[in-house]
Image 1 (cartoon, helix red, strand yellow):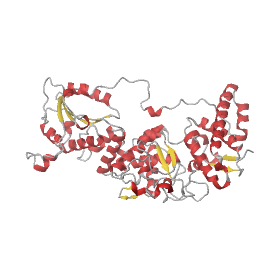
Image 2: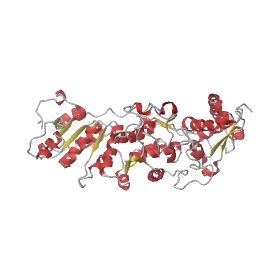
Image 3: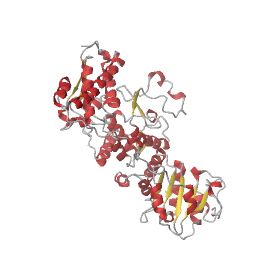
Length: 506
């Protein structure tokens, strides 16, 4: 083990920071160190505080707690220790964690320290072990330096020549302060940049009149300046809808009316109603879209009576930044990712249970879903015959299915974590994104994913009224027709009917 030399600058030594272990000597147990570590904590620098009362396998829960996860949820899901370590590596990889700092690392055993070193290697991070004890740390340093391989030849035996030796540096506390400085002072930006929420809208209570009378009723009931603002939003939305219909003139004919339903479902979900910052804004947009579509021969009906006392609250997406913040505290990556897809698509798992790893991009920003009703047909005909020509192709941007679905940026980390987890298991691009963990060679069943999503939603306090365990017996409900591509509209009681077969104006 390298001993600290007085006057030696650790920065001047050649090192590979991503694979370096720093053994920080803190024999006096400085009280100021605790405050400094609290200031260092972030997604890129996690601080592990080992519980002094724990079993030999409980270290993973301390690491998960440092990463912002809820270990209680992991225990209720009955995760194995190996699965918990794999999930930890996936979350830290996606978060681009650069430093793993262990406070009071002298509490760790050699085996636990080696396990943390292996985790740091997996996520490409630097491990900092704070040794706050007067005991000699040489024994711990030797175990870390060889990643525990000295056990193969006895404690005093010769280390294997081809063993995975790592650079280990013993430094003093002042060197730790210089090597890992404090971050810049806090600014006025929110803690999570992807959660820039718009301020609460100041719209008054809007009338519940249907779209033919909505604008006229608003003119009578609202103040003049408020109506002018509403009218501006209404007219702008109507113009956007006209442009959308002009982009899909061929889908309004009778043989391809189903294509227009899917296009309208995606347009409302991804562009207009789903991203609306408030229910009132979503209601104004919906009424303008209904009026504009009617002039083009398309009737978009909304039946809010079955949505409760505040039906407009169901129009925007249920996958909000606050929901994703709660899902990021989930330990199981498959539970969080499946819940994200179900809430965003407002769909039962039969729509995405057979999604492959290639059907989602590396960053989790886009999902590629099949547009055909048969789950077995996931491939486009123009390249399905050449599927075996590029076995080493791991880039999901190629050879994906046809329907490109954008996902909210604040949910990207969750999906990317599940993809990283599956890649670490050796899935490649052809493996399923969700698998049966009792038999990873099989895809996860719809029933298993449904139970997983319902348990996760119950834990974070969400009740998706459209997702249930039994089969739908009534027309128009989610799951009544397999692989429905209008589940998002169905969950909001929206239905579309093409009145004019020629697609002309009324």
